[in-house]
Image (cartoon, rainbow, N blue to C red):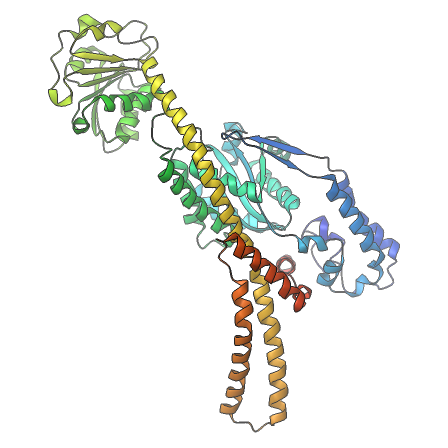
Amino acid sequence: MAVSSAFVGAKLDALLVSNTASSSMSASASTAQIGLLCKPVAARAKRAALIRRNSGIFRCEVAPDALVQTEKVDLANAASSSASASSLSALEQLKTSAADRYTKERSSIVVIGLSIHTAPVEMREKLAIPEAEWPRAISELCGLNHIEEATVLSTCNRMEIYVVALSRHRGVKEVTEWMSKTSGIPVSEICEHRFLLYDKDATHHIFEVSAGLDSLVLGEGQILAQVKQVVKVGQGVVGFGRNISGLFKHAITVGKRVRTETNIAAGAVSVSSAAVELALMKLPENSHATARMLVIGAGKMGKLVIKHLVAKGCTKMVVVNRSEDRVSAIREEIKDVEIMYKPLTEMQNCAAEADVVFTSTASETPLFLKEHVVDLPPVSPNVGGLRLFVDISVPRNVGACVNDLETARVYNVDDLKEVVAANKEDRLRKAMEAQAIITEESKQFEAWRDSLETVPTIKKLRAYAERIRAAELDKCLSKMGDDIPKKTRKAVDDLSRGIVNKLLHGPMQHLRCDGSDSRTLSETLENMHALNRMFSLETEISVLEQKIRAKVEQTQK
C-alpha cells in the first residue's frame, strides 16, 4: 500500500511504508530511518509567547524540552521492533510505533491569531478573509494533515483562526504556513506577531472576545454580532464541527449574559459619544426626538458626533461646514437620516434655530462669544429653556463667558473627560464582574467537552456487544436447522437484541452526562475507564486512529 508522504508530515513519513517492502530490512536501517524524525524536533528552540490582555492577564506558551526527550526515547524503543514492522499494515505500524502518542493524545482546541494588540493594520489587511471566503478557508484548513475542525473570525481589529488539532505543534505549523501562503507574508513575520492559545486559554479568549473585553472600546457590541455571523456562515460547512460549533455557540451565550448581567456597554467612553450623551442628559427625556440639533464642523470628530446622534435616534439635523463635500459624503454613508448642509456664513442663523449646538472645528478663534449668543431667540421650555453648547474643540470654539447668560450653557472637553473617565472606571469594574462570568462559563464548556470523551466508549461497547450477539445468534440458528420459519428467526433475533439492550441500559446511563455537574462528570469518566478495562475496549481502534485512517484514504484519492 503506497501512502503519500504528504500525509501527516514527518511523523508518519518513516512509518506508513509499503506492506510489500522486503522483510529482510535490517534493524539498523530502520533505526536510521526513524531517527530522521528527531532532527527537526531537536533543532527546535524553547519558545515562549507572552500575551498581555485588556484584563491584565498574562499567558505563556512554552514548548518544553521534555517533549523532545520523550520523543527520542520513544523512537529508540520503536527501533528495536522495527525489523518485523514491514509485515504489518500501516495502521498496525502506527499503533506500535513512536507515533503512538499521537493516537493517545486528545485533540486540542487552538487559536492562532493576530489582533490590533499584536499586529499592525498593514499585516491584518493582508491576512483578512472576506466573509464570503470563510467556507473555502474552513475547507482548506480541514484539508491540512493535523486539522479536524476549523473556523475563521476576521474583522477590522483581528484575524483569528480556531482549529481542533490532532497535534498541537504540527497543527500550528501547518496553519501558520497556510496563512503565509494565502497572504504572501513570510512565516517568520507571522510568527513574530501572532499569539497562540490552547484549550482552556483558547476558550477563555473567545469568551472574552464575544463579551467585548478584548475590544478597543470595552464592552462594544459589534463583535458579538460578528461572532454570531461565524456560526451562521459555518452551519452546513464540512469542518465546522461539533467542538468549534459548540465553542462559538457558547461564546454567543457568554456575550449575551455578560451584557445583560453587567450592562458593560452602557456609558460613553469616547469624547464624541460623551458629547452626545451629555447633551441628552441635560435635555428633558421627552424632548430627545424633537430637539433641534446643529453640528458645526464635518471633520472626523464632527462625523462621529453625527453618527452617535443617529445611534441615539436622531433623524434630522443641520450641519455647518466650510464646504459641502464632506457633508455629502456623510449623507451618502448614513442613510435614512435628514442631514441639511449650511455654509459657515449662515452659522449664526442656524444657531438661532437650534436647541443644541455641537462645535468641532479647527478655528483658532472662538466662533461664539457672549455678544454672539445674547441676542439669539430663546429656546422652548419643552427642551429645558436653555440653549446648550457642547464644545469638543481645542482650542475652544465657544467662550466660557457664554455661561454668564441665563439662556445658555456651555460644556467643553474637560467636562466631557470627566464623563468619559467615570464611564471607563465603571466599565473596568463591570469587566471584573464579566471575568467571573467567563470563568464560570469556561468551566461549563470544558465539562461539556470532557463529557464527549465517553462517546467513543459508548460506540465501542455497543459494537462489542453487537459482535457477541451476532456470533451467538448465528450459532443458535445453525443448530436450529435451515428450515426455520422467518417468523421464528425474527423472534429469536428480536430476543437477542432485547437482552443486549437491557443489559447495556445500565452501563449506558452511567456513561451519559451533560457536563453541567462536575461530580457527575467525574463519576462518568471513572465509569468510562472502568468499562474500557473490563471489556478491553482500549484495544479497539481509537477515534484518533480512525481519523488518521481517513487522512490516509484522503491522500490516496
